[in-house]
Length: 212
Image: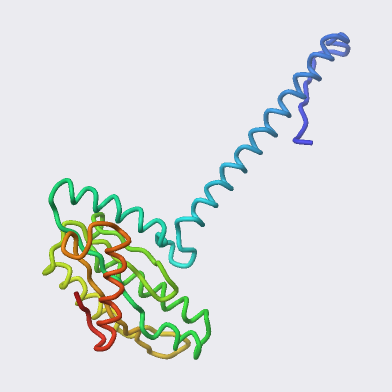
């Protein structure tokens, strides 16, 4: 039952039998239409939820690996066509596991949410993209960025990773490292650029800074 339809007449026996039958059928049609509309709305909302789950990190609300790979692929195609450079930064949050193990997973989640917000503030609004592609890894896409600009952004990201975050009444820092891959120097597709950035990230992890 969806609801009820009430008709008020000016006097008794205002409708004959055929009219009452017609009104009853009309009420049924209205009920069916409303129920169908609600079912369709629920279906659309479920589809939107599934799409968000497929392409969005639930903790930070950032794009996930699949979404970022698609964005990088489109950015590379545009850069190739316009003969422009771009850079991929792979950001490792070095103390994530240690903090999660010591202070609990909720504290680790708060750390990642805080770090994601700080890294987003470093990237240029509207032109660059940020994603969480792993439990303790972020990726930044820098369009129209050469090595000098990418290095400057990486340096500022490293600086923000060292700024204290308050968790469970303690001041902790995320630490970590940033790896950089450049198009076209280090690759000409999304997968290769992401792989090269991650290799550089691990290389930078030995000194806690950033590396090309």
